[in-house]
Image (cartoon, rainbow, N blue to C red; front, side):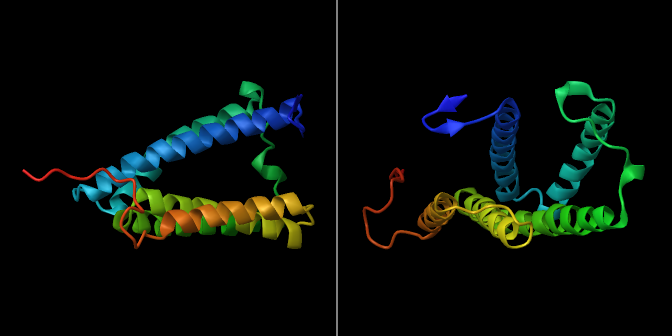
Length: 178
């Protein structure tokens, strides 16, 4: 498939569609979470605990289905096939850094700040770091196009994060006083 110079295989398209679905779920989900946090009736760690308790059975079901090869996705290899290196990477990288610490920092930030600032900072810094780690440590290719794309993403986040200092720099609707 070729779309304006973009060549994608069926696997690439599946990956892109799954990534879009993830982004939509995260965007909508975090908007709901931010609204709940800013209502003042729930704190970030209670929200995180509820998120985890709700997610765990869904993740266990998805894992079991993937072990069976359901859904046309790659069949999940048995856990017994994992070696020490894979265990360490998943426990430290995915479990401790991404799932625990990353989400704790994110929810704490979300409880204090605006979704429109916190989310882009967190979710734009992550791919920039991933591209650099992929290049330096994992030996993935890097191109001028990737570097420019990351630069544009980070520039956009900076623009979202900096509050306009001059009048007229905001598109906010004026509030009518009664």
